[in-house]
Image 1 (cartoon, rainbow, N blue to C red):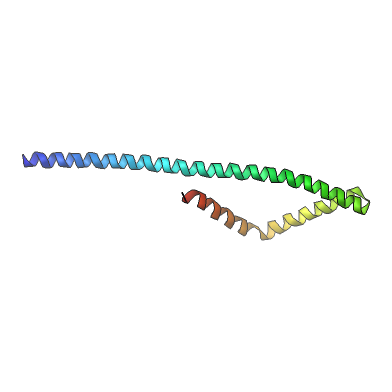
Image 2 (cartoon, helix red, strand yellow):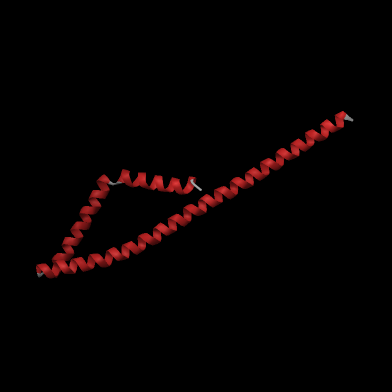
Length: 116
């Protein structure tokens, strides 16, 4: 009789361990799904905001180029000056901005991924 109770207890323990492992696996799947979706949502939001800012920058650049061209009485000069400014900004980011940009992206993405 005691041996049957011990055997049943061992079988129940084995079943409970399997159920725990199964529910833990399901929990981690749901948690991973949630974190991936939060990352995707964050990425889409940043892309949308970046696109809107890019369009605004485009129109502001045209306005500034036209204003400079009018002030210098040469319409094309304004566009050359604005283009040169953007080439300068590009060169500065190319040479000095890679590490800070990587650091910012890693910090923001890790906050999104690991904090709930």
